[in-house]
Image (tube, rainbow, N blue to C red):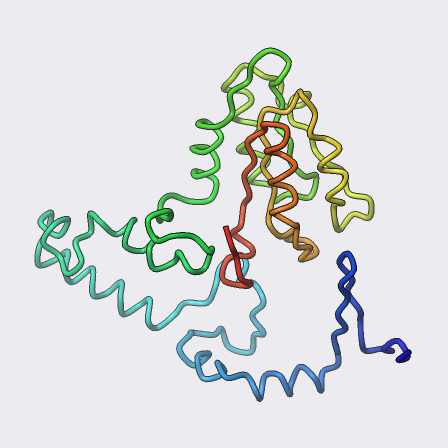
Amino acid sequence: MAAPPTAPWVTVRRGTVSQSFDLSEQCARRLDRDDPLRSMGERFYRPADTVYLAGNSLGLACQDAEAALQHRLDEWKRLGVRGWLDGEGPWFHYAEAMGALAATLVGAQPAEVVFTGTTTVNIHSLAATFFRPAGSRRKILAGALSFPTDLYALRDQLRLRGCDPQADLVLVPSRDGRTIAEEDVIEQLTDQIALVLLPSVLYRSGQLLDLERLTRAARDRDIPIGFDCCHSVGALPHRL
């Protein structure tokens, strides 16, 4: 049996699968040097003397995006309101057209994806549609380590439905302050839960939840479940 890796190596285990990673600066520099997408970095504006790691919050400004926006602004100047239907790629269909382009990122069919709103607005829209409290089933289940604005939206939805945002928002606690155990989530899927909203990836630790397992458990109990995938789409494959 091979000896376990030593520092600066770290081993990550998930179920029966484990993988070791070299955390040394030498390895990081080698990966940067050999990255086939390295040249793509030149297409972004980088603040001087900065190592930028905030892409999960706001990515760097991109030259391609800048050019595309300028093109549409010029089109707006020329066409005015007629741009909705007469523009190069009519504006009216942008939500569906962009959704079709992004479908492969989430593992969905082109007709199943649209671009619209912000994360918080979309959570409000979806919760308003799928949260239907009735009888004793009037609680929403989320994670204690979910992104804060997700929880703000859920509390507002509870208020709008006449529920108590303190008592009726059930938060799955973390055992270690960094992750949540999927079995703890499943244990909380009681007959009082009317809706579940969880992140696909915990932003604090990078923990990837098993969406298929949790979805199956919720469906077995006839509970609608949704996932905020903002921190995982584009970073790893999805099969939604």
